[in-house]
Length: 428
Picture (cartoon, helix red, strand yellow):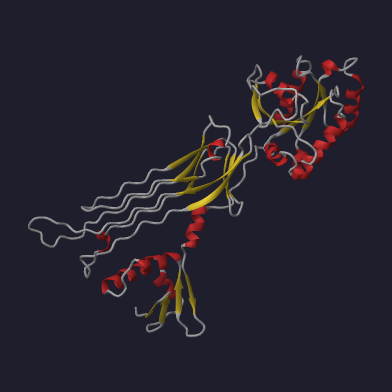
């Protein structure tokens, strides 16, 4: 089965921890701090690979992680950066946050490389925390945590022209004749279970890409059969070729077939009917008496709606040149760019919001209540009972801008500050 969607978990690399160490040299009994910084964790990067045309690599393995950064070392040695995780996808892949279904990135157009998750920053070694009053800090900063999310990958093929029609009307035969594609062809329904792409070449070099969209059936827009799996591939196309069996080999009514497919397109997305359309009335080589009455019926029904009808034979090649030149002329008249979906969600921005702090005034006792995930994490590895530990935490509050914001909110000497289980009086 064609793999055009998958769900995977991705995780960036955790930042390496800063190191606590002191110089140990001969004749230097009290060397200063020399703990190195931790290395940055690896990023998760999606790249377009032109040699890949499905998402099958992500149907069996579901979890991917970048390498964490190394911890800092003594003698001011920094930890090594973690290796990035590079995930290859076909052009046209949309990356969504699985929880919200919001678009993170569309790997289309000029967007061929996207950093989706950034690795955590490495923690600072203890050498950064030395001050005039604390010359031997026994603290180092832990590395920033990794980011982990589940993403939904969805492939929407990128083609100039979409070839649509009911099963067994000859779409694969047409594609194999006018392009370099080699789709599987057989005389039974749903031979094609994946969109096949091919390039139609002209002598002047101005060709176009055509996609054979697998056979649609009535109810496809409601998900009957493989409807939703295939309809989404029409969204990026700029022109549609409706192919019908003009000879009614299987007893189908070609006029009713076109109305039925347009009904499914409209039910899936009404904007699809705004795309220019042409009708390829296939199998005229087996029509009794040439083109016959069915071509006249198609022309009478649809050409008044601005949809031209081209009698063709995908087997013999009759009428194909007229059809292809007409399609190219339509493409030349359309000046709109192919659809590229705008991003709606940034996981890294969301992490920054998650790590933000809040300051509120308790209405009962007037205490300034400070909370936030990053602050809570800092409390977990800082010994506040020691004077140096408290000074270290105070420095953290200053660097985060929390003390400045307390002042902007009107805090005065002696007012109470409450940070989770910690409570102290504020003095500037």
